[in-house]
Figure 1 (cartoon, rainbow, N blue to C red):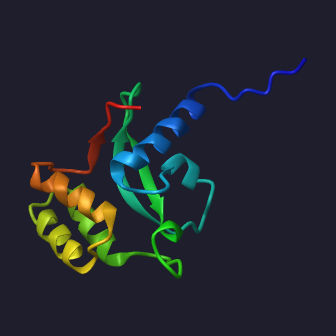
Figure 2 (cartoon, rainbow, N blue to C red):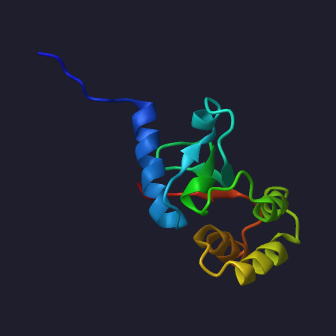
Length: 130
């Protein structure tokens, strides 16, 4: 009898990323390692996630096809705000405040804005739950 179960670190990481969607307000999270195999994937960065059971952060993205109709190739306004967050710029909060006014239903923008208002200074997000 054959055993076809998927086991190991990649499966655990995928499960953690799936669970992170609830926390982030996203529908799909994709690791940078997965995107490395897809040359022209249209995504926007979510941040560096430290998921439960890991000590090293994973760079995670959200596919734009999941958030825009029709699917976009880039979200330049978000990318600019995220770059400020990534670099620890004091202007990051103002950039996300502006995006939030323009995009009331954008859950990822709202997530980052809430983090910045609570004192976050970069894109690293520690998730303690599964």
